Image 1 (cartoon, helix red, strand yellow):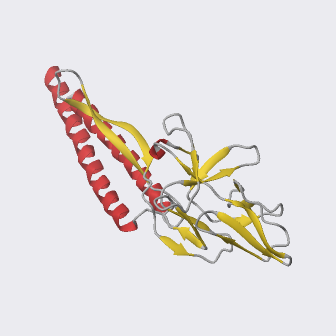
Image 2 (tube, rainbow, N blue to C red):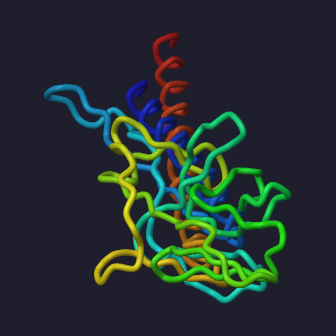
Image 3 (cartoon, rainbow, N blue to C red):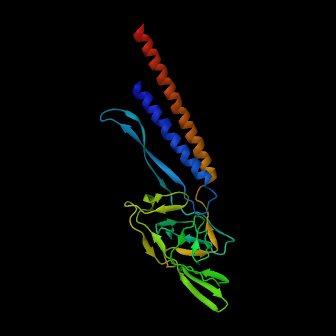
Length: 242
């Protein structure tokens, strides 16, 4: 009976975590470049015994590409295909993102909303407009003609699902993800840069709501299991006293 109580309680904990992950996915469904996460679970079992409950193997992002949509930002970018934009903060830390919502800073760099700088691009102060080709080449129209401003490279990983999320749409490489391999976009079979577009979140609100309903029902079923095990323990205790 104690085993039944633990099995049901561990199932409740697992579904609680599942609900938290789905809720976070829904909260970021409108964030450009956001990637929904999912959790993996497995059974706990002793050798030669039935299942003892449920445990969490871990969580990982799902890098299915979201829909590309036109945007109004003059420096908005999207990646059509696999890979990430490489960005750096003021301390030189490097991170990777699918969110291409950039704006020009006073020093000419392109930065996201968190202040992370896009690697390899510097737009001059007298630029009237900018353009980015599919191969990542950045040019700016100035009063003195067209000027090249750098080239965007795309970071690819052997195991992107092993990247470490540091909040929002930013990820850092880990030992399990492998080192970033920088590739030039625009090749025949590789990723390309889409200028004037953003990648929507890959979270489906309809699917997420269905997942919430399923997780709630599983949580309720496990809660009833806890109640049943508790009642059996109470009856057994009364019988032992009688």
